Amino acid sequence: MKTKKQHRRELFSSHIGMLLACVGSAMGLANIWMFPARLGEFGGITFLIPYLIFLFGFSCFGLMGEYAFGKKFRKGPVQAFEQVFVEKNMPQFGVIGWFPVLSLIGVLAAYSVIMGWILKYLVLAITNSFVAMDAPAVFNSFAGTAANIPWTLLTILVTAIIVSLGIQKGIERYSTIMMATFYIVVFFIVIRALTLPNALQGVIHMFTPNWQVFFKMRVWIYALGMAFFTLSLGGAAMVVYGSYMPEETDVPKTARQTAGLDLLASVMCALFTIPAAFSFGFDPGVGPGLLFISIPNIVTRLPAGYIFGILFFLCALFAALTSSIVMLEVPIEALMSKFRISRKNAAILMSVLAAAIAVPLNFSMSVFGRFTDIVTIIIFPLAAVTGGFVIFWVYGAEKCRVDMNQTAKREIKKWFSPYMKYVYVPVCLLVVIMGILFGGL
Ligand code: PHE
Image (cartoon, rainbow, N blue to C red; front, side, top):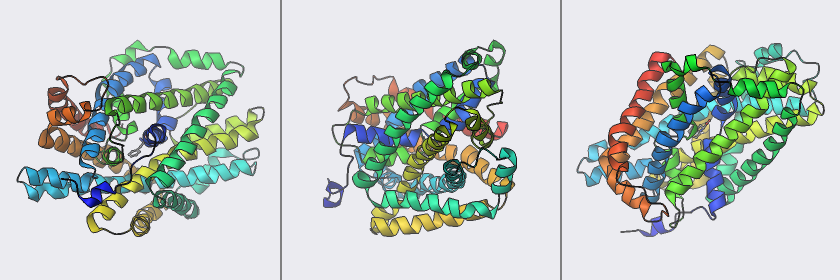
């Protein structure tokens, strides 16, 4: 039942390009500024255990589902959900595919504000401005002010340019370049950090278990929330990338590789920030504190810190850009397929919309914080529930399993279907409820 249009859908051209695009989406700000901090805060291993359980035991299967669903339908969520509901004689529910798409525009707006900060700091690194800088004062005078608007707009522009080049020439090519650079460069940054005086103590601290926190619910909830966010499970992004996967793609294997490389990136980020902060006696901190206060302080004390400062912010920018690319691609795909407008026009429309939301967020840190919380704690996880429900309940987890096993070397067994319906989807819902109760994940 394939139409001409579906035949012409552009697909990823190579396994490695496809994988790096997927890994690029997965690894982002959560890996850089949340993972190391959580590891330090919750006693390394005692955080890693729940995190690994949730990453490979829950979200990796959700990722398989989103990939397989997109690959099967060769459509993004707007049209694929519509088709599923029409087939079930419930066409009136078809519109809910727009919800995960809109949620990503919100995440993109928040992301682009932070990318603006990163870009500005990359320029500060290049102009060697960290040396004489009072890091907290500079950050506070910049973040939450109109001064970040041009930087925010610049990052949206770069994202839009890459996405408007298309799947192979834009997303695949630039994700490959940026991710390959990221892994190679961060590897050297880690070596540098681990050979600093006292670095080993940082590593020991990072992995010292704290069995008291292990039994606290908060650790498990944080690990769960991060395992979902890091794999970009919001019912849309990974469906769209799945829809560009070549026919022969082994979906379960690709999902495992995505989760594995994402974990590697997180561990590498932790192996840099924690030992380096320890070596110079800084608190690695969490969120903006790490990236924009501790790191500038660290690199000014590091031998050859000028180079390392540039490389670090370049890698942070690459990590964020490869995520913002898919956040913009999702609404673009929706407009292109639903209203048949060109990729370029869709890119212009959607980046203007993202910019219109992002610009006002720059005027106040508290507005930015509130907006980001609502989007990442409530709306995005709610979109994951929506996606999980449509894929595993309405379309059917068993059908999804059969679809993905067609090209899988290692078959996913029968337990998958009840597990996704009765465990995975309720757990997604738990992420939303707990996120609201805990005020953040
Ligand atoms: N996975 C990204 C991160 O860890 C976030 C993201 C969400 C990316 C949704 C794409 C889509 O920061």
